[in-house]
Length: 256
Image 1 (cartoon, one colour):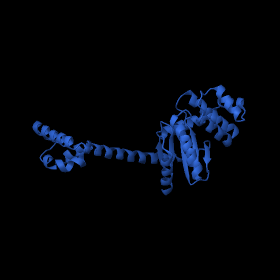
Image 2 (cartoon, helix red, strand yellow; image 1 turned 180 degrees about the vertical axis):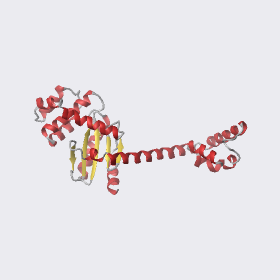
Image 3 (tube, one colour; image 1 turned 180 degrees about the horizontal axis):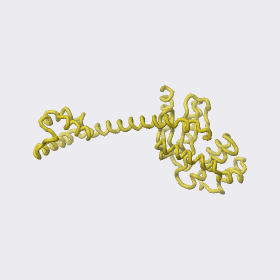
Image 4 (cartoon, helix red, strand yellow; image 1 turned 60 degrees about the vertical axis):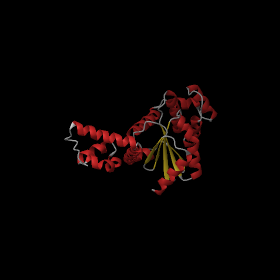
């Protein structure tokens, strides 16, 4: 097979699967200098082979997808390394689980996100049962005004009442099923023994807005556009993962 022929087939993701079966036929072809009849014959041979062996296409697609996944993982590792301080030690995000844990799990979350809600109990179980995971929550409201209100409320609670109060409010918001409004947030604050008026006022503060803006800027640098997104070690996990899968990822992170 000529060099130009191999290059052309590689561009299609088919060079390896087709190289052996088509080597004899392609030997006489030079894609830079083929007659119309030769080109037609070559294309017919390729089509015939693919029709007889359609599994080759799935094999080629699998190779391409794996290459893309490897490239994405390598890119993610670089992004995490460059932004590590803002991801793991920003000084404002809530830190739960074991603050001295041997691995850190970071979650970018939106309180109105269906899959964030689905993963909430499983992540809680993971952190509690493991006992050695440092868990960091990044407020990342992206699903509309109610998401923004929820995050402003949670951040305001943390800034005014501390980490323990934030944890209770975070849990309440992620399981809340009604419409989020000033009135519903006021009731939520009162139910949790907080100064509702102070919290609602604090929601408007620039210090609260800065947390959200910084998290959005960080997400943009990390190429994060959806929730939940997790960061574990140097790996980004984009989307919901069942509990057993998360346990395995934690084991892998420790092994690394």
